[in-house]
Amino acid sequence: MKKQLLSTSALVAAGMIAASGTAIAQTAPASQPIQVTVGGYTQQSLQYADQDDRVVGASPLSATVTSKTHKMNLVNDAEIWFQGKTTLANGISVAMRIELEAYTSSDTIDESFVAIEGAFGRIELGSTDHAAMKTKIGAPDLANRGPGFTNQATMIGNTIQNPTKSSGADGPFGSSWLRFGDNDSERVSYYTPRFEGFQLGLSYTPEVREDSGHLVKYESNRYKNALSAGLNFTRSFGAFDTAAYAGYVTMDSPDFANGATKKDPKAYGVGAQVAYAGFRLGGSYTKFKDGYTLGGTVASVDVSTTGATGVNDYVNDGRAWDLGLTYTFGPAEVGVTYFQGKNKASTVNTGDDKSKIFSVTGRYTLGPGVQLLATGFYAKITGEGTTSSGGQDVDNNKATGVLGGVVLSF
Image 1 (cartoon, rainbow, N blue to C red):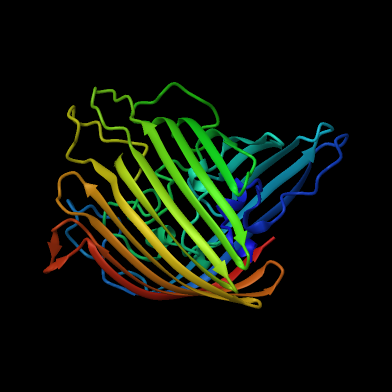
Image 2 (image 1 turned 180 degrees about the vertical axis):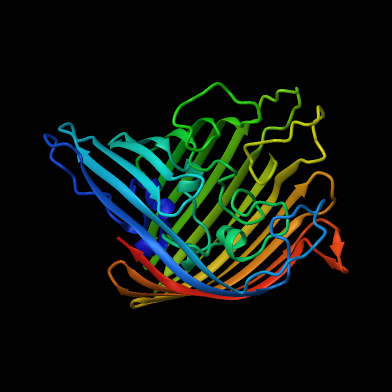
């Protein structure tokens, strides 16, 4: 039951590199070089979604037309992991992990880092998630546990047409995770040994820039000196398994070429789970503040004006929360999850971009590494803009759909 309770991120924070409980590699003798193994996952799904006709990603300031969306679609995701580990004669273990995206994307390599672990704790160096992400505990979501493609952020980005300017993955509109635009930047992290159920993780990121490969001089418009902290707790009390976390992220505002100034962004979150007799109940709450964006990217800011706020500025400033319940019986699991997000988005319009997603998911394990997945969902998006076309607010959307497929882990 405890393995079911802990999320993938919590397992990583506890000292495991592989996702979903997959072992990283067999320990090699100290006299032998690191033996590299291959792992990963692939998910192939067919979806049907009935939703309003909307312009995808249009700004409330410029959206003037609507367009027809496809009802049928294929949704897929896959990664290949190269990973290895060895234990030195002094008992310290050294491991590596490189994740290769199996589909063409902006980052061919997803994560690439080295981990050093011993009685002193665990140190991670390289491109990977920060401590507040890896220690996160929230709603138990069967569609978002381990390999999967139907969590809130990816639903908004790939399934549900999002006509607002708010980002699905980086801010409160589509996620209760504390990523905050800092996705797999080059960083150093330290995780303490777990003591009485507690483990603390700390991360420092010189520059918020994914896959940079090296530290360069501060770029104009780049956030820098990002700090992340996550405190995780796991313990069993009789027949009950419990887990909880608290996380915090902050970073320095960029040095703008035109002298513009912005506030330093910050975000914090809390979450908890409890499991008993096959049931798991949990949720989380996250607050985002002063994360300026342009074009959906937190790490860049409009510098066309010299003031503190430009007409084209958008922000990640709001809150998100989720709640979920799952039940496991034999090889089958069923669950319900509710997510609600709110984001200020535009510095020009009053009001907020809002999202609500309710989903029912089932997973069935056919054998080791082979699962069937099915999800039904309802989503409602309400944009802060007032632009209309044909009497309709084009930055609003409603969607109802189903998704089913197979997930293979290896």
